[in-house]
Length: 595
Image 1 (tube, helix red, strand yellow):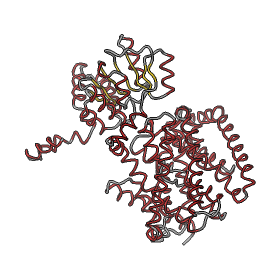
Image 2 (image 1 turned 135 degrees about the vertical axis):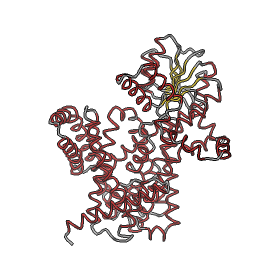
Image 3 (image 1 turned 90 degrees about the horizontal axis):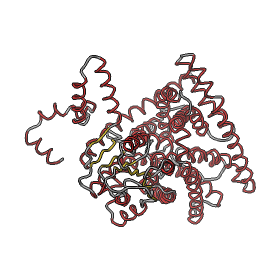
Image 4 (image 1 turned 45 degrees about the vertical axis):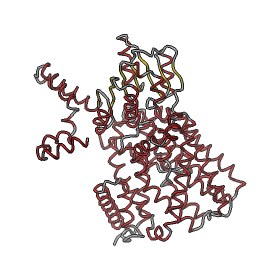
């Protein structure tokens, strides 16, 4: 068979296996990522052996990582990155250094490695986490914009940037006297590249994209964005950094341009296809026979790695004054070994820094942690609720959520408590103050608190989900409470704890996901607003009036729609009138009692 045609057959085989694996995982209610990895295992060299051009498939799979990091850069933007710069740079750097130091000490003492240099290399492998797996999991649960999602992604970005530095220093580990020179050289190259990227992002990229957009050609715009993404990624690779770093920086350069959303829309289908190929390629590297032969040792290593990284990350995030729930989420999200550790381990084996057995154990441990991570992130809300029920842990979590500061001008009687001072919160606070209502804003972002101070708006610096903060806000003497944060876990906890303190308080809450609407009502919220559905209602109002419908009749329908909890926008709710008549009276009564 011709080589070119062989590659096409291999690509079709991998994508088909990933598709069937994803469908199987979805049918079993498992994360689809596991299906992609499983598909790769089945058709890979250690499975059925259907893939002949593994190197070429892996090379194409790198496009998936590049597009994933590019899309992350576009969505994250410099403004968002600036919000978590302290925990990203400080916490991310400390996490890497602590992981390397502890791994070196333990591996030398236990005898896993022969020299401290090999321990440092092993620590570098274990310090990296999986941006691709965590990012895809956050996207599936709609938590990329939440505080815990932003903190986790911020640290992951620093890890990805550190990969380039590690690859540059790797050859010098066999010659310790030249490590310092290698580090200085890598940092200098990184600094020069960062400066050039900032300059290009201000003076080159915006006019270039405007010129391309002026052609009104979708194809030209898509090609230009792809060339920009992959071109910068290849440039960083040639500079001794990493493809991932270049792709992310390319996304950041575009993120501040008015065509960022358009670029992201065009690239997303390519990102999804190549990302699927990448996860399948990870599966092709896994040897299930080796995993079975060494399952006890690998499971022990998995437990040590995941618990160790969790215990490193949680205190670090807490030190940067984030709530414990955010710290726990970040600890669970970063507790695995990243897919780029495959690259680092492979290079280390070539340089003789690790033996073949240690290399295979590292790959096996990495593979298992990657497969566990989607389950952990999906189960995080339940894990947090379980931790809340442990007496000493509950006290500890509440202690770390102590209010940091309350403004001197705060009026704590007959006031309205507003949780969150984002775009929604700012508009509501402005409206309430214009009507003369006393307001107290609860905010846990230092940058937002600074804005509140400058505007002389009463505030309480703390986590609105903390019962101690809610008591400090005098919820029992407040007239109403508005929750306008984007974190679904914190929103649920805030409603539940506010009702426990003041059962009769009027709570209006923002629902981030469809499933949160009924949950928040059940917890005690008087009104639950879904921003997307509200936008639909407003658009429908204007459309119906322009079509000749009377304003009173339209308003009556809109009120009824809100009263039904957006039933027509939620298929599972809209089907209830059809399903209920099919049930017997006893079944309906049983279900009603259960709820």
